[in-house]
Length: 240
Image (cartoon, rainbow, N blue to C red):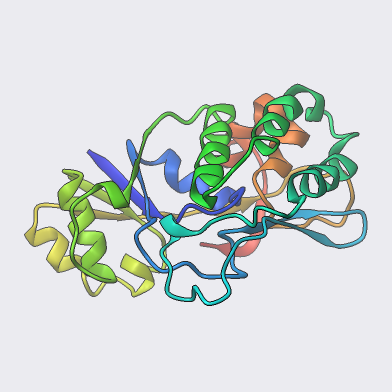
């Protein structure tokens, strides 16, 4: 079993989906502390003149220690219409917006309580549009006791992984120093190599590291090939 583990971000960037494309099972790391104003409740798209943030308002005041699985969306905010209006304003003229818009809009307009449920629904849709097939498991559904790199190892054991796909920065972002513990447990560690592709966006100059919907709305069925860097230029000096 080839496994990767990552926090369930909101409309993640291309590197996230490239990492998942290498695996057979994705463990959504929802049993760790929520990080506010990061990428768990927001992400970026390229506007006409600058980056535009798409934000999902969440209840966080007095909840600094809450886990990702516990984060609730602000119930009194009209965030759905605001976020969808921003997406529509940016991408209404994109070549493949009309092909995919209805599915994204339907997800956004549902009544959501937990942030993770919304994020995983959007991630699942993007995976399907990228033609990436893998199983999604929530870390909170697995038995694990460790923290940091040992939590990752516990989750790999619980999910019966043979191979763990790590980001280039290493296990739990702490380098390769803990790889020996994985090998002793019979788990090989493979490090992702992602070179950010260059592709046509609606408004130059090129903005890297945007939400993956930017590639999907601009390139449709070709998005997977571009994501995998097949026959496309990549950004120089950009590697993760």
